[in-house]
Image 1 (cartoon, rainbow, N blue to C red):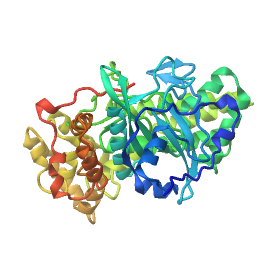
Image 2: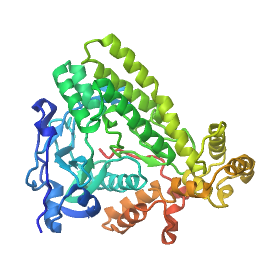
Image 3: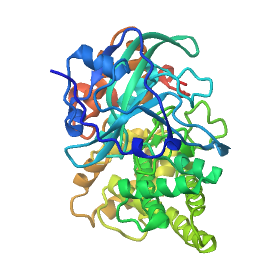
Image 4: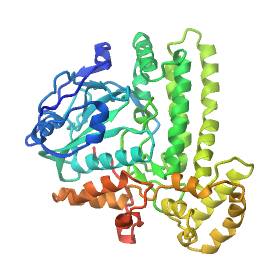
Length: 472
C-alpha cells in the first residue's frame, strides 16, 4: 500500500510574496510514533506502510502533489509588534478537501529551518510534539474547534534546548493557517493589493457569505467569541495568545505552553514566558477582543472610506464582549444543569466560581461531581458548597432533566498537566504506552471509564506542574 494524499493546493497559487517555497529538511532516522487513522479517513489520505509514513511525515520524502511552503506573517507578541515572523519551523505541504467537503492544510511542524527562522534551528523536540498531539486531539474530543494531529515521528536526531533532547516532527492539520498576523504583515507594509487578495481568499475559504472586509470581521468575531467561551468552560489556558497565534478560522492553534487548570483560580498562569499574567485564564476574553481589534485595524487599511470603516469596525469589535458573555453563559448554565435562562443565573454561576477559588476546588472534578452527590467533597470547607447549593437546587427544580444537561457539558477526563509531563518523560525513555493510553482515554472524555479513574486525579504536591514551556 502506498501513502497517497489527494492534494488540492490553493494557498500556493497566491503570489510568491505570501510565502517562501521551502522543502522540509531531511532527518537522519525517522521512526513513526503515531498515525491518526480516523483523521486520515476524513482527509481522504490513504496510509502507506510504516516506513513510508515515517519518511513522509518526517519530511524526508515528498508525497505526489505536495507544494511545500513556509507562510509569511507578523504579529503582536505580548503586546509588542514584530514586523516579520512567519513559519520558522514549519512547512505547509498542501491542502486536501476532505470527505466532509472541508478544505484543510497539512503542515509539518519541526521540519527544519526556513527563511523565517530568525536564527532558530527550525526543529522541535519530542516533548512539545507529543503535548500538541495529545492536547489537540483531546480538544477535538471535547468538541472545541482546534487544529488536529495526523502523525508524530521521531527524527533520530538530537535537538538542543535546556539540554540535548530527542527530535520529533508533528503533522498538523488545520482548516487553514491564516492568522491575524497574516493580515497585519501586509497592512503594516502598505501592500494593499496583497491585503485585498488575502481578504478575498479568506472570505472565499472560510466565510463565503461575508460581505467584504467588515463581513469577514463579523465572522471572525463570532468564531472567536464561541472559541474563547469553549476554552473557559473546560479550564483551558492557551498561554501565548499573540496575534500570530489567533486563527481567523476560529480554531485553537499553537499548543505551546498551554495547560488545563487543576485547582480553580481566575488568575491562573502556567506559561513560563507570561511573566506578567497577560494571558492568565480570566484575561483570555479581553485578549481575544484586543487581538480582533488588531485584525480590524489591518482590514481597514484597504477600505476607501476609512472613516466609515473605522466606525463600523468599532461597532463590531465593541459587540464582541457581549457575544462572548452570551456564549460563556450558555456553556456555564449547562455545566450546572440549566437548559433554560432566568434572571440571576449569572450571579449563581459566579458565586459558585468564587467559592471554588476560595476552597481550592478542582475545576473539572467539581463540575463533573455536580451530577452526583460528591461535589461538596471538592471544597476545603464543604459548608461553602452547601450554602450555595440551596439556591442551586431550587433553580434546578424548574428544569426538565438537569442531570442529562450536566453530563453532556462536564467532561470527566482532561489532559492534566502532570499526566502530560509524565507521558513525555516516559516517551523520552522510549516508553510510549502512557502516550497511547492518554490518547485512547481522552478520545472519550464524557464517558465513564472505570479503568482510567487514576487519570481524573489531581496532582499531589510533588506532581504539580508550576510552569509550561514553548519548546522553541
